[in-house]
Image (spheres, rainbow, N blue to C red):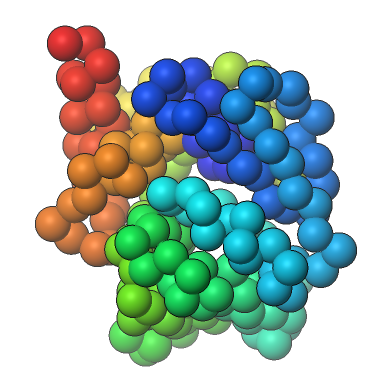
Amino acid sequence: MIGQGVLRECLLDERIDAVLTVGRRATGQRHAKLSELVPPDLSDLSDAVDTMAGYDACFFCLGVSSAGMSEQAYRRVTLDLTLAAARPLAVANPAMTFVYVSGAGSDATGRSRMMWARVKGETENAVLALPFHGYAVRPGFIQPMHGIRSRTGWYRALYLASRPLYPLMFRFAPRSATSTERMGRAMIQLALTGASKRVLDGADINDLADAYEAARSQ
């Protein structure tokens, strides 16, 4: 959902000249500034690095639920695939901004009892240690907008069931809740201006989205 959201906002922002999607499948979208790359193996992007390195920012939105997964399998998707992209990009273009989408509750200390939190935190640490402008964003609740849907069936069911609660989430936890639209705008703003913090929570994400919207309204 986050990848779909940030892609939409990038295509709408006239300040962005070109967008390249890299993933397991094509998006199916057509746009003058959109190019797509579907590598045969996301764990080996050596043939794509030169193309990817020509961009100013990478928004790494790939992720999977840890439900029913062993730690080894979850690490392969969460840590290994992230570093398969981040490490060569850091060498090829150290001026690049790399935004890793983590999650609320991630634990960079490695002490959490929750396996997914430890692995997410380890991934954050690995990304932030690389020699580019790396950031980790930790969103909480994200409202899907503009027809965006999760590709995970039980996520779609959960979002559908919780839809009546959306107004309550934004009313009582406005700093922890955001939307796919504002998430995308926050990530673009982070690429444009950077931030004083390298690990950003839900409140920071909303502040970035506010800054984006304020700049666009001037």
